Length: 232
Length: 209
Image (cartoon, rainbow over all chains, first blue to last red; front, side, top):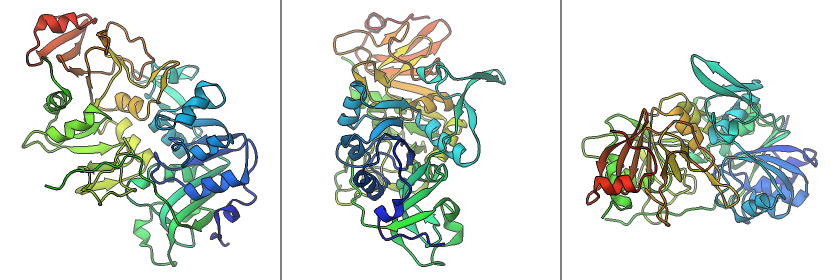
């Protein structure tokens, strides 16, 4: 079965439908599937629920899907750098389910691992715990959180081989592996597809079993907070 | 007189112990890395998936794939390891991180912490803060003691939505250092040039001896 596609639009063909749940990798603008996001924008799919730690910034990353009003709901831990996100949320145009960052990552991991729910201390005694089952283990209170299974996962990696084995680079790994595993279908975009046999099998970060479709492309890789120090 | 941002960070750095794995929050806590005492080796965790966080890069050496949890460009060290977000929070939730140093909007005498939203005004999100306060061994908060309007942010009860309940161990402010103890807060020390009376006057929380 061929996993490599010529373009983001071709790789998403037949996978998109209105009202779907998409899990996206990335942290801030680092390691985001920018090509697939743009292709979803162009496809015009509507009423999306997107599980992603952030929503990009105005005009880049998932922010472009908010600008085009394709999003109905975000499941995120942080919206601080996106004015349009905050405006749509405060005006009630966009639903927002806040998840603590580790809870969101574990919900994706669990969903991909066949675990429908798990107990965590995170959020006990806060608004996050409201309406959730509480249970005591060894004298401590935990809340039940559900695994996420998405209709589609979109992720970005550094390198792939044609079988879909992925290697990430530095902190651009972040949410990509858990997001990839929790989708019924996962499409990955990478900077380079290398020949079979050229990735060290011991150094694969995400085995190709999780990756169904693959594209190679040019990434802008925008930096959100350029911070430097002076040379001595 | 009181401590400025850098002096608060330097004081918070005195909390570090040799060999610890530590997570520093955004803002003043990030500055703590500049004041790690000589002879103390700590490994900084960045919850977006890195242990062994190095300093900011030299100009021209920024790497879009290498950022901290505040989305700032950073560098790696010889001991650096990268991992995904699920593993990052597994080590946080699993109690492997000895201490987190975090900012706060409000803190209460029972150790409650609020630092993620002001209803109707400011919605940032909790990011990893709820996971950190629930999972790490020790939580130190670094914050201004009072608001711009002079109101105490060290309270009997938090008024803002909580990040965690009963999670704070120690508070470092521009006016001094306080510990959360049974019955309220205990003054550990006053900042340079601040009297105990001034510290008490700026504190709404119950102070116990």
